[in-house]
Image (cartoon, rainbow, N blue to C red; front, side, top):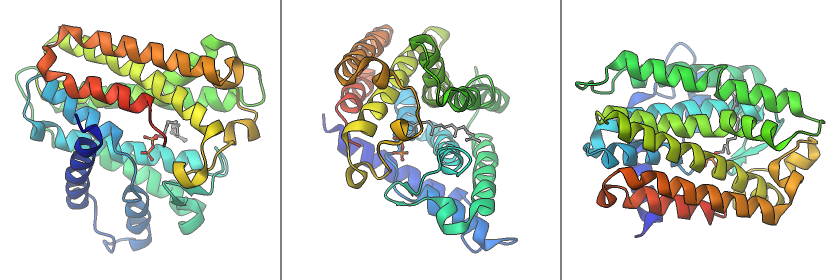
Length: 295
Ligand code: GRG
């Protein structure tokens, strides 16, 4: 299976829809704000979360179009986290998606606001997702709010911030990764499945898949922070060491971190056995693809 081609195809469809849903670059009342939002979102990310969302819907028997607005909401919210994560008061980074970070181009104040507006727009996009016999807009909204609020995504980032300069235990590191990375990947898969009216057992299986995939994704992110280059990665490298950030990789070494990512990918793969095999081929292929990724 040419998973890279499939990813590109969904990315293009998501980007076309995002271009329709987001305010125009020159929209009132502030074109600098809208321009900053579009600058960051159309900077060319991998679009993994929209892909997971659309593929989860397909794995539950839904048509791929049913999850497209949810996919856009996920990418929009993800872009807000990247903008805020790059701010001087957070990770303080100059390079993202191969370009100067939002605050470097538009200034810190405007970057904060662009992130805020993207977060808000994401919920507006989610409200457009078709309802079905099992799930309505309030379920979608509650789900995204739950997984991206202080109990999960933002909570994970807060723990990460608190942990700088300290030695962390593997359990503490896992809690950070579950929040800051896996929660949004779980939201992507769950919202896709919900938009396709997934029965509880399938939703549960996909959630476990996404949790393990999300943890593996962050482990590979840590490995690449040590082994890759800014040209390939599109963002700065060596940041974890610079910030004295304890990662699983710094704790156990590159090989053990890679081995743990392999083992998590295998469990993610196994979780899918509850669903019909012919519907999950792409999700299985994606898990191996992400393990081998170079950026
Ligand atoms: C910072 C105030 C504030 C709130 C939000 C930022 C944040 C909380 C959470 C995000 C923390 C973060 C950046 C976690 C790392 C997740 C991760 C590996 C992101 C990179 O995702 P990719 O590789 O990026 O999919 P692209 O650019 O391809 O979309």
